[in-house]
Image 1 (cartoon, rainbow, N blue to C red):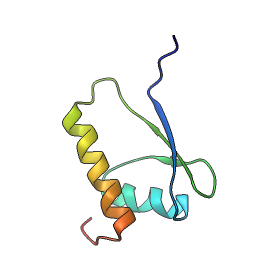
Image 2 (image 1 turned 90 degrees about the vertical axis):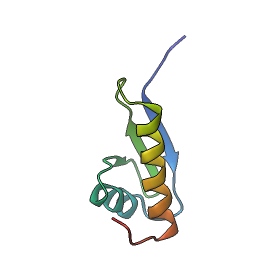
Image 3 (image 1 turned 180 degrees about the horizontal axis):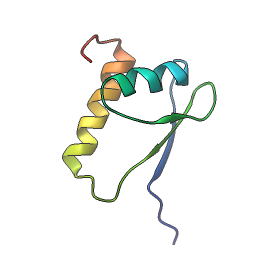
Length: 67
């Protein structure tokens, strides 16, 4: 079976704004269209690293001002 480290997902807000807000918090992803996102996970990331990335994304979508 094919294994991939690419994660694609959609956000309700503008994907460019989402990517920019995440980047300002230390998380780099690329918008793929108006609401689509593309993230590539490095194979050496830990579960804690992924949890930290998810926390950043939650802050961005909730409008939290904690960069």
